[in-house]
Length: 106
Image 1 (cartoon, one colour):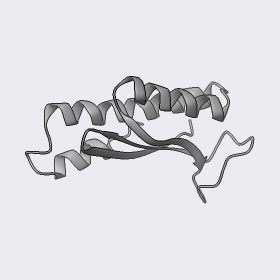
Image 2 (tube, helix red, strand yellow):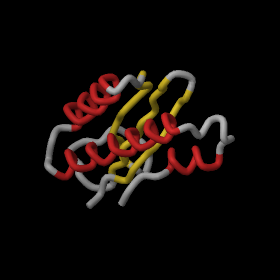
Image 3 (cartoon, one colour):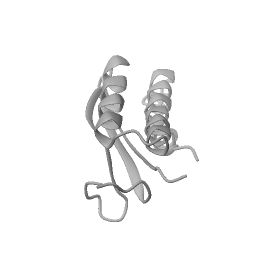
Image 4 (spheres, one colour):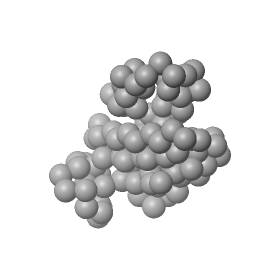
């Protein structure tokens, strides 16, 4: 299950915005969510996953607004749950702000 929301937004945007660099950024954003999903399924702690995602985005040149995991039903903080979770990412790369999400269930 791939997250293509950011890429879809780029396709719907003007040709001036949908540059190869913007497509690369959207792809990296989606890949970050996939790594978050893999880590949730592997049993990593939520704090560690969020830190990994933010660090990964920063290392790639993004300015993350947030990279978090929440309950999909109400966007509340997850307790010990490992199902019904959603990964949420918002990050800037230059003047472009990417916002994406991915359900993290198997």
